[in-house]
Length: 573
Image (cartoon, rainbow, N blue to C red; front, side, top):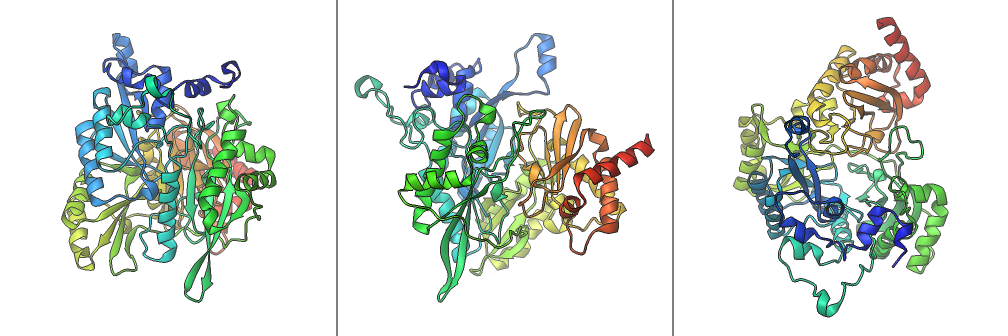
């Protein structure tokens, strides 16, 4: 065992946790008190975040009441694929143990919000009975593996789904703690057998920080694959019998998290490291995990992501080290076609005679409210037609396996419940993301999901003013700089700076291959659209043919754009 005096407190907690057990079982029984700090850290590995209702915290404190403790429970759903039965189980659990909503995440998962401690074991038990899990949906492990959500029935898309499922299954922690604690599984008998051996992949301290995999093809980068710690890009080539998988480019070191006013932390896109033969996919994935496990910073969690290892040691070092772990020399990445982001909303053919329908969901929140009965409509369609839902990294949902003769009936049900469909949206609405932020996220500095409509509506009005409201545009809103809605690769990133204030980033590209840059900071919520307005005017007047807004901003340069903004604000003062 390592010297506990020379590692950070979170590392010590993991190392002494008895393979993620800690005192969770004991403390779960005390429903009147929250878990302690040790339990808070270990819960994440089990797919749970402990928090409290931040809206009521001040009032409760003034009354002398304890915080309204509650939990977020995240389901691990490889590639976002659910069966109809699984979705209906999750929908039922949202009423029984959550706040009456399901939330689709930007990693194609489902989150329950508002779960109270007495319901924790019940909700996880229900998830487990649906043959799903929350294990490794959070924590310092490989989290949910993402891939294109499109249920296109050809060799390329079938392989993407299969690879996502393979990696998700094989990179799960092996500890029995999860089933012991949450589903009354067989317990490891420490008295007779000694401590459970460390995980063969993760060891006894697991990883220095969270770890994310994405699998894509250049023709479909709907998952923003380069924002992952490990971006796996499958390369296909023409063959006599159709398409043949040539192998995979492994690009390492993507991550969006950073800290304001700390230049040692920064967002980064994954960069090319190695080409991997098809049969070496899993071994190479484990080697990439090994890089983080063995070389990641275990003394400073703000410096503990794989991106810092790659940035400081280099891609050639990473390729050589991965080759050493595989026992074979790896070649550099191969050339790739330009990335594309197809639109999977609306009606599409699967390629097997059936259809799929992509339905937009504002900020991923599946709920009935404001005259829109989205959750009821989805439940009715899934029950009546047996559609298999697929959760999208755009926080939307696909209903798959639809018989063509049911298309009109499904559309009618959605319209009857006032569900907004893809054709009803302008591009700024269609491609917008927002993280949950307040009141459920403990890291949020300000609002995101709850101001989504206000921000996108104001920006849409400015776009219409200049006649560019039909231009494709990605807008991402987060309540803090940790980047859960991927703000640093969008055309426009709006990042919480402090209560009511935001930083604005522009100049990324729609295809997810370029970072944007900060063009303004400490901007009030109500002034965000005003700050962007002169940039929209300039774009409308001087863009090149077919040039996207992010590409235009990148070409003009941040310094010039800042001068434009400053000039307009000075005149308005």
